[in-house]
Image (cartoon, rainbow, N blue to C red):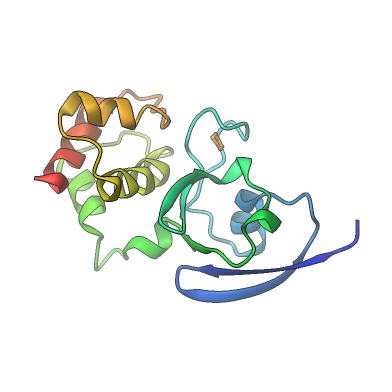
Length: 153
Ligand code: FES
């Protein structure tokens, strides 16, 4: 297919790329930009492993064509914090043991950061409900909710 230009600000850096029109935001992040912190679980919008922030809102990157997001600001787990300087949500997940295998964690954390910014969740039940798009095969849900509660407190 003919390549099309797309410009994205990814983790604060402007990236101008020529891409095939059918490339998803997820594949662009992982394969073109080598930002493999964003995970591919189902590739069908069911699991939330691919959650990133686009203009501050959480989206499933597997459901987005990259060209649809031309001009947008994208933040992935790599853009939230570093091992030496964790984002408060990352620190809370560590403190609460809010993961086991870790595969869903980048998506959980991106989703959680947006959840707090949205300001809709007040109770543990509301946190669970508003995080229901992010599946965890290991069942770390109560620790994930506790970590988010710590950040909201
Ligand atoms: Fe996108 Fe599962 S990989 S929702």
